[in-house]
Image (tube, rainbow, N blue to C red):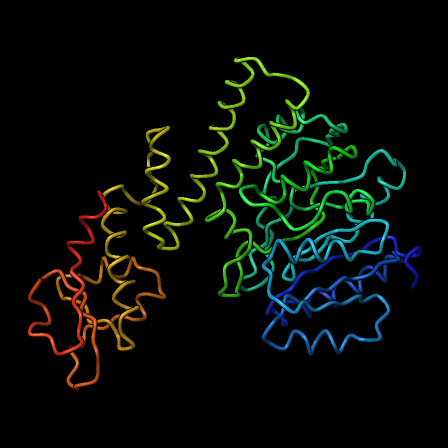
Length: 400
């Protein structure tokens, strides 16, 4: 199939998830053939160490497959951009290897863009899916009240749309000429989706549609953290950077008044407190207690915070215990020996990865060295040569 014949490029970066990639490829080959949409699937393997490369090799000869393998693992955003820039179709859409498009909606939105060349990008919320025991739809990640067209260069309207709807412009269908001027490896300090969409808005109108065109895994049976959760939990500060970047574009041809700056800061803080609250909840649910402790204190600089299912004192104590346990399990290859004074009730609030390294059995052998996690400073004494004690009380005192 020649480049001029391809209408749509489905761009799929992947890393070490062969079993999910197979589902992705099979589904889209079948469904888009049925719709008779001229398409390609761009696969980019980010230097996988499982059987992904062999699987992609097995697809050789399928005319719709356009595959690449990178020689160095570069991470999600770099691989996303690399995949998109390999697109040969008139339009391109990004998709995670564990996600699936809603083909009829993709076709509908591409047809809108075909009819109106003034629209260079279509955005929509995505349908969240719980993959445990099936593919149950949970609901859209954010909601759009109706079709909303943002005119080229109107960053004020774009920012107001984001603030009003808590919109995240991540899932997009983009015309290739706009893509070429918008998407590349991301810069630091800024959320990639705001960066790419901000660049695109300088070149074209963007249409936000209310109905999703992709079903995206929110809760997975894959034990690894989902990219979306990783961004919510650890990269939320880049949201602030993205919104500040968009504000600078809004004001590039004018000097804003004091009122305009204050109004922007008010909306920014409301938005960020909401996103930080989501991150805090996820860290508590995951047992990332030091992150929860720091995040709670950062949020407390701006608002009094009720915490659902926990308390500041509990977070503080668990943060200390987490750090003590982390340092103990990094010291010895043997299981960390836990003081009886540390009850199961509190130990069970640690992440599973740490709990799995703990034992209450006093070692009978001379194998070692051993790490002793203790509340009683005499627990484990006299220690054998090479053993180390980790006094939880001193770690607790570090969290004030």
